[in-house]
Image 1: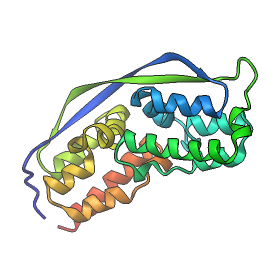
Image 2: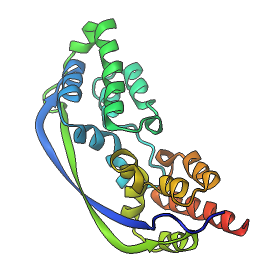
Image 3: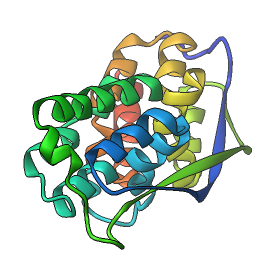
Length: 220
């Protein structure tokens, strides 16, 4: 295994500023219009913000759209379909947007009556967005052992950035990308990508990744 990478890995961290977009949806048609017309940062917020809550033991709530459709609009079938979207299958926010639009447009076409049913005042869906600020950290890895050492020291926000946001916004900063393209270790990169980050806490993601690396180093 080549432990001398083409490029060192620079760990970053991030902070998000969340804000209301001043737009609400009272029915499925309004939700569809907002998803189609509002910035992609809104889709990112409503599908990922719960992952920030890494203190929870089981971070598997549905995305905000599914939660609202199921619990406010009382449309269990549509809510389940939206909740069932596998975010791992998408490499961009545009692709997630296309999938959401497809599901909602099918509902509007097949069941126009339900798509116009409105929720009571005060229970509307409030569209929000997140602006991400990325900062470099002091941690730099020049080989796999240094990478393991850095993983023990960086914050959960750094782990979050390199697993979730880097994949959508800056793929070369994603852990698996560096392992594959700089260390040229396809086997370890594949182990990283078999993890379902949406089904684990950030702490457990860190532990699993460190375990993979230790096993790999022990096998040299």
